[in-house]
Image: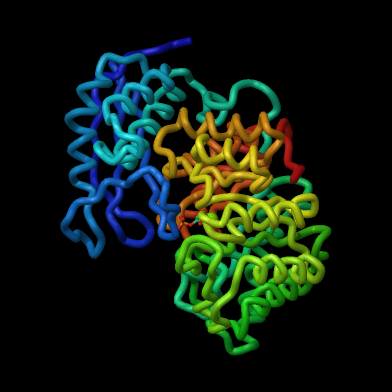
Length: 424
Ligand SMILES: C=C(OP(=O)(O)O)C(=O)O
Ligand SMILES: [Mg+2]
């Protein structure tokens, strides 16, 4: 295999899809090969996520990342110059040690992750392999089922829906291309339904519609209706996934909740668990993420005990892609799947460790974008490489989300039928 040493590492402040500053990294190798990567940013974050280093001052209406850029250009560049580009684990470990903190808050997880991803790209480029194959190895690539967020609420929209994401899951499609068609067509039908009902068709941060529904239940009803009007059978061709992102309506980040956007008011874990039971009986729901908040380990365990054999129960803010929390979750049967976000932990290697832990425990893992994204399609290749079988990247009506779906179309096309697509 061809290899080369890193000759330079540099960074630039760019903008993300919310118009806030983020970081883009360039890794150049001695033979001239280049790897680049841009870092996403979340809004509904877990408190144990690796720290995104931001400047004190506002730039472009959001806090800048000039200090993180400087850290890449100076300390990180100094430590990595001369290292072999394909030694991903070594490079990630050098940065972890250089940072020296538990949560990467000295150099910044955004700085470290940008470099880690750009190194992976440079490694793939010098190896002459597509990124998904470089990170995933040989074997039949599996193209993930696109869980498309078509209705937004919570922190991601200015409307009356408490739950953050309502996703369409084309689990009955024969391949990725068809799956993407199913969800896109249903998206357009949902738009017609909203128009007919006089509800807004403006979109939230991830490109899903953000109507002022009468209740959370109306949101899931509208989606079920849209599936039918698009000519698909709910529960056979297309199913539904929910991300409550319950942190965002839990004042104590534990077992108390306030359904503030819908005006339904105070609730306890038990109320949300009961509500889920009703929804599972009435709607074709097969996945539920963060039904409870990051401190409500007890509620999560009860939720999983009740519904874990019917649906995928995903922990996002509670596990933050960190093996320390995922291992606790496996032991306590807190969920049966983990959300996987590269920037929650801050290096490609540690993200792969989290995936491996899930796999070994028989858990599922759900690859995810962030609500603040860039046009970088790294996640698409990464999801194929990790063989997780499903990913979420928002709605295809926004370029930064579409970049991932289009890259997956391209990967599937290039594989000329030598790929798999299945929900389980
Ligand atoms: C993608 C999500 O949102 P954010 O990036 O705002 O955390 C999520 O909560 O799963
Ligand atoms: Mg989430």
